[in-house]
Image 1 (cartoon, rainbow, N blue to C red):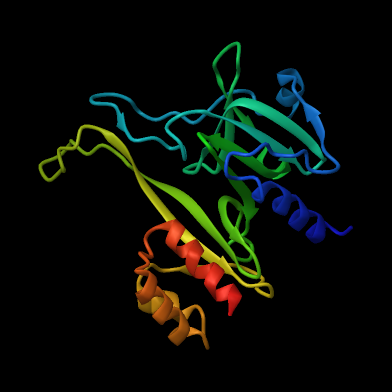
Image 2: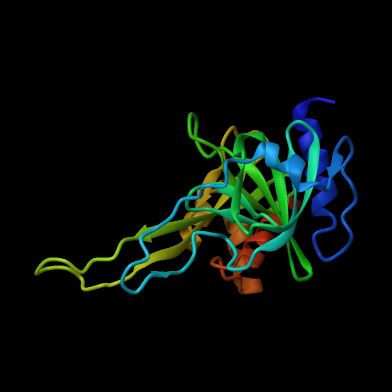
Length: 240
């Protein structure tokens, strides 16, 4: 089985159980429950820090404010079960909390094939995605995979405190601003296309199907700012 076929099979197995069901072990992966083994794939434990003087920092560089249980699937076919996992989308780093020291540990992102984080009844699947040629891949949340694929790419804008000088904003805190974008790809696309969230711009991404999609969006009262409605639109598009 080639790498592309293996990846599709793995994601299919995981995606089919993303609504609170037990996730079956994908074929070809060894389960590793020892954090000592995982540490051979991590950095020294140093993590990027930010100036916390004055009023500190608002927001978080991570996808989730909470550290979540999850699993990491490595390209060398190792699989690690992690008690507290998170994704620093500002730095594009997958991290976990060491259970004994509580230090933030970074896993080598170039060795990761995909990872999961379990939030309540949902399982969030993040896959490696290259947005443009020669760009470093990021990890994108997989929202839908059929004939078409829909991803959500999380980003965080870091705004530094501004309090010095006569024309400063007098903002005495650093802040992470949440940002995210949706990307769509068809079966023959080398790279995904960014879906802008106006009706006109979304319809432009689906040449030849604009009228049917427009009628469907109106009938179903879809809000293109919500990922659930974008998933419904993609499923309908694949059914045409």
